[in-house]
Length: 88
Image (cartoon, rainbow, N blue to C red; front, side, top):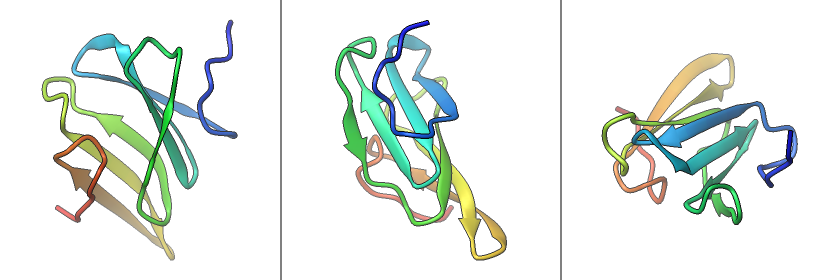
């Protein structure tokens, strides 16, 4: 195993549009994006309460986020690789 540089406490990895060189690593309240096989990561801004960010297997721009808002499970969607989030 090799540590790649996701956020502390990371517990989820998602590959973007079936391309293993592009991945998202997420943890409660944080996510990081790599487009070069994990060599470098950039922070994604995620909505408050997010614990998992998942990429679409077919659309490289489409991301989903899930987490809690208070005691309610909530889902968000981004159509621009995590730049903006909205409730579906």
